[in-house]
Length: 81
Image (cartoon, rainbow, N blue to C red; front, side, top):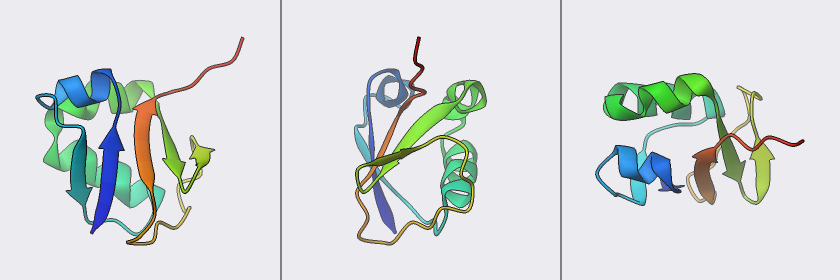
């Protein structure tokens, strides 16, 4: 199981929970599991989210591995300007 911290509107979408546990070995598995287990997150997942794994932010690197002891943070997609 991977412990995932959620920030801002993502946490609000699931009743204010800021930390959940998810079974996932890659970034794609993480997002698929979140969509399945937390349908209220689906609209935000479709718009795009950023995932920080051990301090590195990933957006679309689907096969990025996630270790059970990784620090994982899910936040609204970061956009530059």
